[in-house]
Amino acid sequence: MLVNEKRIHTLNGASAGSGPVVYWMSREQRVADNWGLLHARELAGGTRPLVVAFCLVPGFLGATLRQYDFMLRGLEAVEAELARLSIPFVMLTGDPGREIPGLAARLGAGVVVTDFDPLRIKQAWQGDTAGSLGVPLIEVDGHNVIPARQVSAKQEYAARTIRPKIHRLFGEYLEEFPELTPQRITDPELGLELAPVDWRAVRGSLRVDESVGPVALPAGEAAGRAALDRFIAERVEGYAGDRNDPNADATSRLSAYFHFGQLAPQRAALAAAASGRGEGQEAFLEELVVRRELSDNFCLHNPHYDSLRGAAPWALKTLDEHRHDPRPHLYSHEQFDAARTHSRLWNAAQTQLRASGYMHGYMRMYWAKKILEWSATPEEALETVLALNDRYQLDGRDPNGYVGALWSVAGLHDRAWKTRPVYGSIRYMNENGCRRKFDVDAYCERWEAAERG
Ligand code: FO1
Image (tube, rainbow, N blue to C red; front, side, top):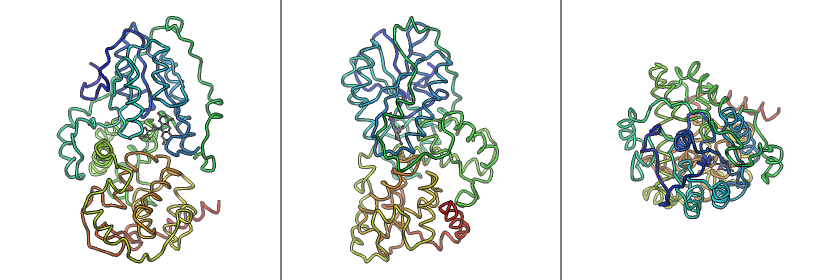
């Protein structure tokens, strides 16, 4: 088998037919280094057609034009790359729970393969599809180096509890990807009328908030790979020392590519492991594998990953005890959104997010903790953090984003710290801490200048 069978999980009990194989691409939007697509290709072999389908959901979790634009640019590249391998690409629009079974029925598909994704909405789409398909729906984990269903059967407490489990299995799963072989079956034999996607029509059909416009970041798997290669060649060496300095440009900047599946985290792990760059390599693998996969573990095992109910009892208790503490400043969602607080540093971070679709990881923690401190309730704070993150961040609505928000606002995967007003024993951050780490004024000036244009 091309794909380690522990990556594979069948979502219904239906028996396979002999018709075409459909790969329903969703989280892993790339052709290379894609375990789900490789498994589908292997099932198709030399005799059964393989068709790749993507279902465009017009109002996905409040996404704006910024995210759809980035995703569609990547999917155009997917279609072109698949064409090179004679694999047809079908773009559906609507509810995947209806559209995927509909396509499978039209094609007389014998099996459908799709991507592992721990988000509730994805699990619901997959549940609906599995229930009405009549043939197997097979999930493949192409996102985690160690498949999320294998690493642990329960919600892990913290990085320190999942780390040894990941390290133990790392050798088994960190393997090179096989190459995807071209399809030899020609179109007429497929018996399908598959027209190329009309991308203008697809873009025209979007009903999304256009006030948050596209960003200039190049999209697609070639761009993701180039960004990885640059990071490994130029920056991974200094990653351990400089990654907490928002002025240093030391982070990988790969998260949008991971979020839309335009780059496999496993490709990045292979490149880092082979880089021989000591401390930087270790620090990057910790973020890339341990922290990232801890986020999938949390969302898979905790259905409340985007609300305070997902937090630990100690955290809920302490936030509740400090619910009525006077807030030093109080802002509404709109004031936060417009970057209109008293804090020059906070406003600069929000401006970076609005203007670029990205906020430096260290600033994301500070930014979210101040929203906790300056909101009327912890519930309102978490709502604001998630809404702003999902609206502006290219990689919003991702397990990593949910975990980052709950870490900042409600101590997820963290421990209790010295008690303070509003925060209780949730870890506190302030501007002086930032000043000790980096040149705060330079950061502010940079984003104030960007705002002025
Ligand atoms: N996945 C889909 O299968 N279809 C979509 O139309 C779609 C839109 C979309 C828009 C913004 C965004 O951030 C993600 C989007 N995704 C879509 C899902 C995404 O690929 C991820 O799988 C999840 O957000 C995180 O696991």
